[in-house]
Image (cartoon, rainbow, N blue to C red; front, top):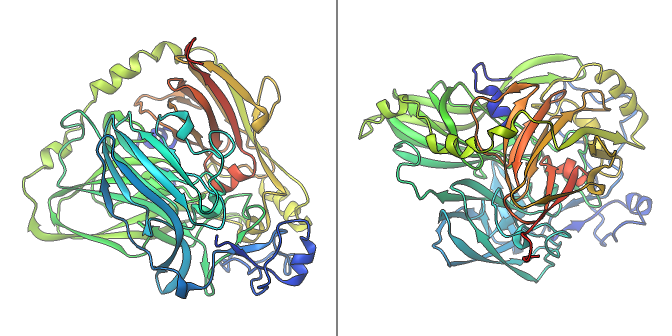
Length: 567
C-alpha cells in the first residue's frame, strides 16, 4: 500500500551457536561445519497462513543446510534488560559487549543475543562533531563486528569483516573510534551473518544532536522506536541456517512484531502533545508502512539530514535500515494505535488484501499538554540550510550516469515444485513485497541456491567482482534498474557505506523534496538515480540491506582515494 500523498515517492526512495541436527542431516552435510553431539534440533516447517497451503511435492522438504539456534541452557544465561541511554561527550569511552541473553517475548522465553545484555543495545546520545571510543568485546561463539550504519567515519572503523578489519573472534576485542559528523538518527549492528546475529537482537540506535539551536521544531517528548519482527512458532524461535541463510528468495519475514524489543510497547501522553518519533527499521526483510491511528503526522527528516521541506503524510513507509523522524500531534484524548498497514499479497491465490498489524499503542489523556505547540506543528518549515547544501550538486542532476547497475537474481538446485510455481508466479510481481507471500518456498531457498546480483551494465561484472575507483570530492551519479523479469524480482533497500547520497529521480520523475540518505528502497521494475558525494576516503561497500540478499552475494566495493600525498 503506497501512502496516498505526494511524499510517498520521496519516502520510498529517499554462539553459543549450538548447531544441531538429525544424524541424517549431519551425514548429508558432512562436508560442512562439524555437528555437536546434541542431535535434538531438527528443521520445523515455518508458521504458515492456511490460505497459503503447502505445495505438493514439498511435504518432507527441508532447507539443504543445518538448523541452528543459540545456546539452549537458559538457566545459565543472564536475563536481558531494557535499553539504557548513554550520553557520551567528545573523547568519552564506552565498553560494548556482545553476549548471550535470555529474552522474554510475549509468553515465550528465548536465548538470544544482546549488546551489554540490553534490548535493544544502549541508546547512544552524542553531539554533532564528537568522536568517541568504543571498546568492543565478543563473547559469542562466532565471529562478529560492529558496523556504525550511516556514519561518515574513518574507514578503518566501518566494521566490515574482510574489508576494513578482521572479524572479532570469541574472547577478542576491537577498539572503534566513532566520529559523528552529521546530526540525525543512526544505528549500529553486526556485519557478519546479519541474517541471524542482527535478527537475534544485536542492534542499537545513535542520536546525534545538532550544533544548530532549534534544528527541529518544538516537541513535548521524543521517542526512539526500533521496528523489528521475529519468526516464532509454538516451539520457539524458528532455527536459522548454519552454513548459509534460509529465506534467501524474499528474506526472513517474522510473524511477531517488536517495538524496542517488546510486543506490547505503550505510552501515555497529555492531549495536545507533539511527540517526535525517531523510527529505525532493523528487520531482516520487512518494509513497514507505519500509521499513527489517525493523528496528523509530519515528516521532518530521514537518514542523514532534514528534508528541504516538512510535509504532512498519511503514513511512513520505511525499508530495512532506513530511518525517519516524524512529528505526531495528539489533539484529542483517546487511544491511537501505531500500526503496520499494508496491501498484502497471496501468491497462491493471486490476490491482494489489506492487512493491519498493531505495533504499539499511544493513549492521549484528558490532561492538556503545556505549552501549546499546535501552531508550530501546523507550520511546514522549509530548511534553507539543506537546500543551500544541495544547490552545489544540482548541476549534476541532469547529466549522464557515471555507473549503471541492474539488479537481478540467479538460482540453482531449487526443488522442482518451487521452480514450476515461480514460472507462474512471476507473470506478475508487485513493486513492493510487504509480506512473505510464499513462506514455504522462501524458507527452503538458501544462500547456496540463490545468488542476488548487482550487475554493472557496461562491463557485465557482478557483485564483488565490481571495483569502482573515485577521487575524494568526486560526485558520482549511479543509475540502478531493478529488473522485473528475473526469476523472483524483489524490492531492494540499497545502502551506501561511508558516504551520503541524494535520490534525484525515480522512473524519470525528478525528486522535488530532497533529503540526504544512506539507504533507499528500489521497487521492482523501477529505475533510481542517486548522486553520491565521495566525501570520505577508504574502501567501502554498496549492498542490499535485506540481510539474506547481502549474504547471498548482493554487494560491491568501491574505493575513494585520499588526496595526493595522504595515501
